Length: 218
Image 1: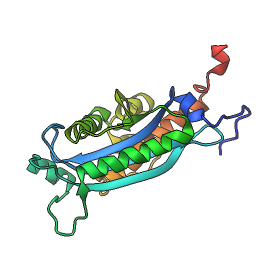
Image 2: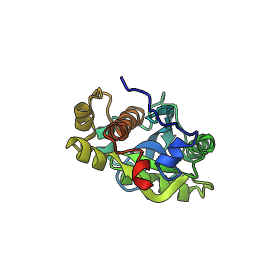
Image 3: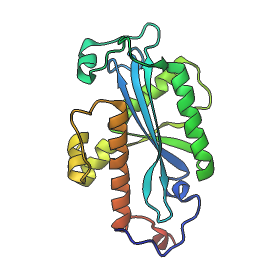
Image 4: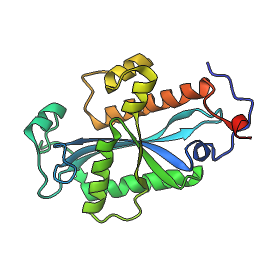
């Protein structure tokens, strides 16, 4: 069990920790690898916060199935890999534009009380998810995108450093996080496990004395 820190934590501790950026974990399941042409089929996002002891934790989550945009490409191999049938009659999905507007509002609302100026995307192989977010934003001319336009945190890289593993399932297992292979490749499940992995890495770094560094900045 973690012992409470002796130092006082301010209300904007999360903003201080990440240079006024609020980490938001994003996972996107798609119909291919090309963010410009291939459909977004699912998206999940997890907003993180910092507790009174200065540890990162999950605050709230969002998940939506997405209707492929008009003219979107769907690769058969990608659909087999994820197991998603975008045309299933019982599939409840929303338009891509509506989903992203909802996501952006949730993120902006979460930033305000934390005194964060921007969100920063956290993902496993984050450049993939970040590219699809940017493409959807441009495709629908969406305003007030809360995410940093090019910076992100990649848990594949971070877990390679921290645990010697870059595959999400293997990194989670080394980190002591349960991982069910049967549930993988769902945006909801992968976003949750990626969020747990990111929190574990950041919190262990804190326990090892890596943060805060106030005594070294004096």
